[in-house]
Image: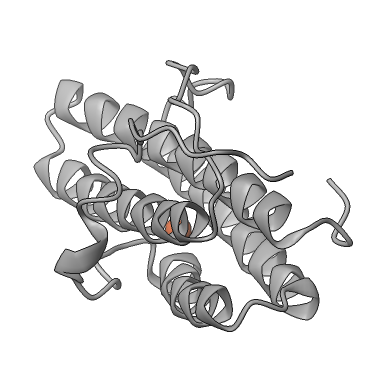
Length: 162
Ligand SMILES: [Fe+2]
């Protein structure tokens, strides 16, 4: 999407990306558990928790701005399954690098100050992910949990403005 989009467009596109990341790490965690690799499963679940938290933070701001967040219709990660830890790590690092680049660009375009603070926090988290391929790097903030549950599905129907 274009970086010249509205605030809500930028936030919605970010939510879609974060949801894709949660699918990726959920799949990685399942693969690690099947492979009996408890440490990898733990890392994947920590990363998953961070990405879910990103969804929550972004969703909360969208709702505050009067936007709407659709239920996540996609059930599966579209990427092909890696067959080794090395392949997973390479894929995860590439994905995290893309997330860092995405949020750097979002910050160039985003004018809403509360949203910028959220994105700056997420960007710090994504940089840690790219460097360490582990979580958790997002501080818990209870006030965002009501606006979004689980993978960020919001039930409240707000009038969409865009
Ligand atoms: Fe991440």
